[in-house]
Image 1 (cartoon, one colour):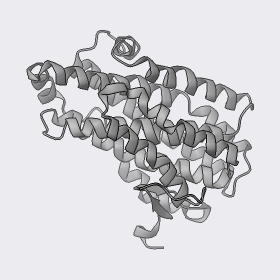
Image 2 (cartoon, rainbow, N blue to C red):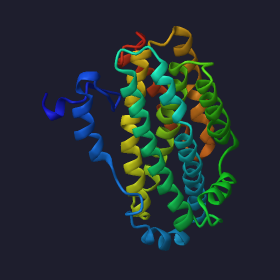
Image 3 (cartoon, helix red, strand yellow):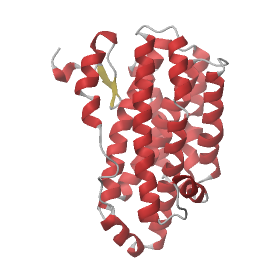
Length: 281
């Protein structure tokens, strides 16, 4: 297969990972290209520019960036039960390969967490000598509904997966489709809009790289749903919560942007063949 054909297809801007026969070639050529070093991004210009930004803009950016400080660490810490659940699932592809991809994604999330911790320390000036202390400081700037998603609902889902009380389809629906596909999508778009003038060039570069990683994460989640064949109940539950999780950002993300991210769930599921209803215009 030619290199450009290694992706099975693209759904709503997200790459759907290939089936079993092409996985080794896919990962050697594609995932390797996405690797980047969070320590190599220069944040010194950002740190100099930060105090000069208007107070209202600083407040908005602080909420968005502090939220990612909290969320990226949370998602990195909860992936192991997903890999374990994949080994027990009945999938069309080899279960061990699916589990392996979860660990690759965890490496991405750890990289994202390191980048946003650097932003918190070097740009936002969050109090604390350690990442844990800075995350505690970041929480004070984050909406309560957002914290509930990443510090309560996601860990609870991971625990249920680990104990065999729920299936991989429900876990992926929350993690990949809602938290990454809606919440992260809306927050990243809001950040990229805010940073479009490159007044914070290092932060802008890092957010772009994170967003690029998330594209294949969401595509991987769709692959998992295609293979786990979720029930109508699971799909209905997923669709019903899309708008709710988008609203966790509150006013820091514009309403139209939140609604657009929420609508992407229906479109992705439709184009992936999981549901037949067409996405609304």
